[in-house]
Length: 120
Image (cartoon, rainbow, N blue to C red):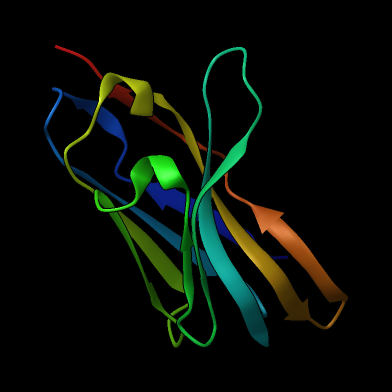
């Protein structure tokens, strides 16, 4: 069974920084892409940033230049460095592992979510 465990959320003032981390565990052969999504109250879950096994990255326009995603493919971990945080970044952030190959086949997995609140 594959599990994604997130850490690093919390309360931060506008302009501050936070670093989210996510580790995938289980009998994993490979992971195609890992990323972060967020869901604000009353809104849909949307992509924040994603990184492929080859290192290609994709960011939401709203976070470009402020957030940076990184990945350790050997350890099946992904991190999101969030700088210059704004109140509109407040949301539950979810880690996603896409195209996870195990003995059972290939599917996507989600973490349980971690709250990020940007407020003075």
